[in-house]
Length: 456
Ligand SMILES: [Zn+2]
Ligand SMILES: [Zn+2]
Image (cartoon, rainbow, N blue to C red; front, side):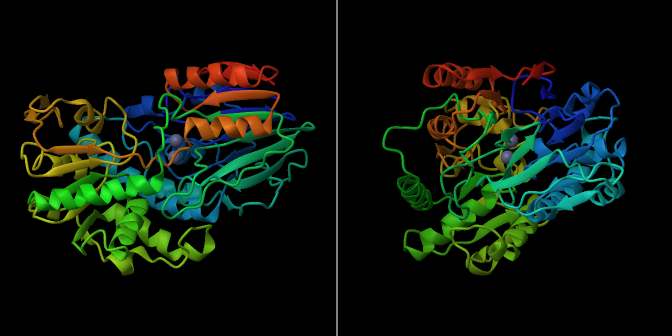
């Protein structure tokens, strides 16, 4: 077996990994960089050397794992793409949205390579998708339609977002398990991951949170109580609360938390605003509720919370009234997104609140706001004047990624012969390499460098 990381740098960028086994080329994920623009946002597909891809496996529908799939499948027309039905449903919405975003960026930022694919391209791409449920092993078909008998694949629930899976690949008498993005702890809606621990030779493991220790005594329940109290305090100051969230995953987890807070009498039934993309994804979370492993199988978010949906034009007139919650994407507050546009209306006011509940790249507008001192100037959009940071700002930890401690515990249970570390910034990867080397002295621990062929 050979493994090549196709990302362009050691970072959480455009995730894609090539596995060569039994004379076959299998691609794991086909992401698009959430921050970089143009062709540089693609994984480094030049390592594919125009070879045939025998099968593509997608772990989940976040942009950094699926965003380049329609681009890639244009040159691999007959390659089948394997994913769960829930991932397929979400992916269709996300990829069509991505076309719209790229068309806008072509105008606004003069990125002439955009769009990298069209709406027709997404439809064409989806014709090659093969839907498989978790826990049932299958043999993929190659581009000629023949079953690849020496390659067995099985999905395991990753507890990260709707449809997310880890992938077990058995071939050449060995087994490789790719975690994808994973969360071992239950969130508000999703159950924690159910990953295999026996008979794994090679573990390909995400390292997102390697650089952040979990605070002593941290519990999600206590964090929810702290969020509820902070929202009440914000209302008492006479303002609203704005929470930048990813449309996929974080929005639905937040809505479920707000629902719980209402039921427990911790929060009054105040108006909640979300964007159009978040609404579409939430519809899927509701319609697929009984088909997925959930903590709250009966909860229908849209029916219970009746959020106001902000259409494209409405954001122009929308003002942060008192006692409202604005759960707006994008989570990183990228330019021209609802959260970025809306933040211009609250950043310089002292009675409005901005709460962060998930990951943001340090270089993104959300990352800059989180680090900025009060009174300092922040550039939210390079085309517009900077703003002074004056609003109330708080951070909460509701990550959809496993803590580094729980990933370490998992690796100790698996005791693989080799661990390949991926999906992390350099300090995060180093933390795992150091700690795993100490904890598992007989295991080969490798940071999977971009473009480096690893022989397994
Ligand atoms: Zn993800
Ligand atoms: Zn990811």
